[in-house]
Every structure is written in C-alpha cells, then in structure tokens.
Length: 422
Image (cartoon, rainbow, N blue to C red; front, top):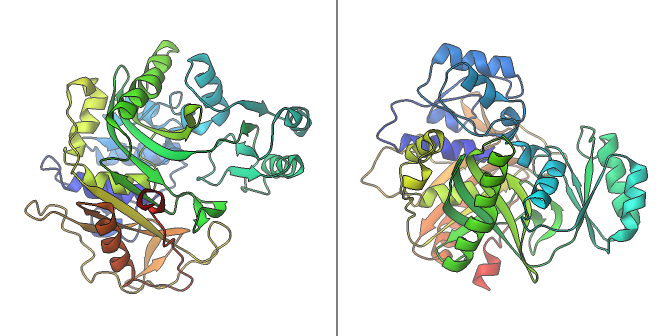
C-alpha cells in the first residue's frame, strides 16, 4: 500500500511527532520509520505490537486490519487509535453492505443487484443493459471490478469470483451494477462520528493502459487541483454524500470515524457513488498529502475527539500528481526481486526540513531491501509525486524524476491528467 509511505512521510512533518513505527513497512519506509515485521491479517499479532510499543497514537492505514476489527480491539484495550470500527468499515469491506446502505439513506448510486449464487446472477442479468459491471463484494485490492460487454461475459466473471479463480479467494456475494458514464472524482472527507468535513478531491486512473484501456488496477496515477470540482459541487458532495454517510452510520449504531474516500461518477444523471474506501486510498492520497498544509496529526486527533467541525484544513494552492511505476505483468502475475536503479542516493527524504517545500517525493509501496539494495516486491512499486502551481508543471516534474528510475519490466502510464489537460 503506497499510502502507508505517504502517511509516514506526512506524520514526520508534524512537530508533534518524535518517532514513527510502521508495521510491516517496506524498503522505502525503513529509511523514515522503524519497521516491525508482521502479518497485517493477524489480529492478535497487531494487538501485541501495540501493547509492547505503547505508541501515543495508532493509525490504521490498510483495509485488511480494518476488516478484522483492529480498531475495536485496540479501543477496547484503552489505546488511542485512528480509523473506523469493523462495523463502520463495512462501507469498504462489503460492497453489498455499501449498496444497501446507500439505498436505505438515499445516497445516489447506480442501479444494482446482489447475488450469492450463480443461479441468482443468471436471473438478474436480463434486467441489466450492457455493458454491465460485475464487482466482488469483498476486498480485492482494487482488482475486483470487471466491465463486461455481454451477459455471457458477466456470468463468466461472476463464476470466476465465486470460484476464486479470478482473485485467489472465493466470494460469498457479487454485485451486478449498471454501467455509468462520465468523469470520475475521488472526494475525501474527515469524519468524527458526527461531522464530515472536506479534505480535498482528486482523480484516479484505474486502467492499466493509456487512454483508459485494459484491466482495472489499484490505480496507476492521480492528480489533484484547485479546480477539479467547483465549490458548489464540493459542498453538494459533502452534504449529500459524506455527511449522509456519517448520519446514517450513527443512526445504525456504528458511528464512522476516520477517512471517508468517496469514489464518484459525475454521470449525466448527476453525481453517483461508485464505491467507498474507509481509509486513505491509493494513488490519490499521495497527491493530496503533498498538498496538505494542515498538520496531519491534527486531522487524526480531531477525528478521534469528535472535534472535526472545529478544524480548518488548508491545502497548498495549485496542483499535484502521482505516477505509479508498476511491475511488468501487473495487474496479473509479475516477478519480484528486480533491482531498482536511479533512486536518490539519500533515501531519507528530510520530511522535517520545514524551510524546504518538497515539490517531488518518491513514495514506496512494493519495495524491499535485498543485499543492501532496493528491489521490487509487489505490483505497484513506486509512486513518483510532485506539486507545482499548475498541473502541467507538476506532471513535467514527476515524469522528469521518473525518467531517472528503472527496473526490469517497469511500466507506467504516460497520460496521467489527460482529461484535465484536454
């Protein structure tokens, strides 16, 4: 998860922070924080780490620990923790729950059907026009969405999700969804169980290929600008999506605290929610945190203390971008252990140097250290991020930095931000 590196980097900029620990971390994070090896899906192991280390604050980055109830367990033991409970995180961990929740609370979203058997899929399919979207209900690392041109393709995709052949794990439910057209927007809000306040907006590039072609990935890049959405639209999204989520979760006995990431399609019928993330999600987070001027620790504390409505969030004017360098073969099978050349000699990016505005930062995701060298260790390897007064300058900076970096099979999109530039 690239966002973990970005969160560590942002925390280290805070004058309130003396040390950051990261479990499990990666090759790049190890230059910034003390990394603790762990299995992020092992609840007891994670709880034990916090019990031993006794951090003043625990920040939950990825979705897997949220899905197994890490926030509930740590809170029960008296630890201060940022992130939603297991019940509240269902907005991300179960697409079936999220769709039914949106229907209950009149939050705009595409027409859908929830199926728990292939027979149900066959029954539901005739009521959908093609293309049709088939989604795995559970966690799928951004790869559980298939856009199908025929009903037969949709049935096959659902069958592969149920069997586990598509994602490696079997799905108990799949969601059939109306295909929406329009511009996508990622809207981030900070929530404290009662209030939702806007952080920023960005636009992701999900497809592996340029011109938005090929299979979906966890995200190949993103950009954030002052004008990505009008003030009126941002206000509408805050009140008609984010605040409705907070109000609805509170009314259902699961107050939502943490980051609410709303994936929005700006369709001809108006804004529609595609999905929720209940955390900082990639690759928008890298672009947004590069612009964040407010101390990120103030955001976390306001969420925990239910004082988000008293917080003013300031963003650096202009634009920021994130370009993902991925392993060859991603989002399918890929090889790891490839040496990475061209990274800065000094891996410790001086996040504490307040006098220097950091315009370019290389965030790490799928990296490791082998024989003293940084090597690839995942699908999405690096996120080259840059900020500037305008989008084109930010892109020029990021691509110029990316041109210095190489590893066997490296792939990246050369058209990040193309919609805005067009």
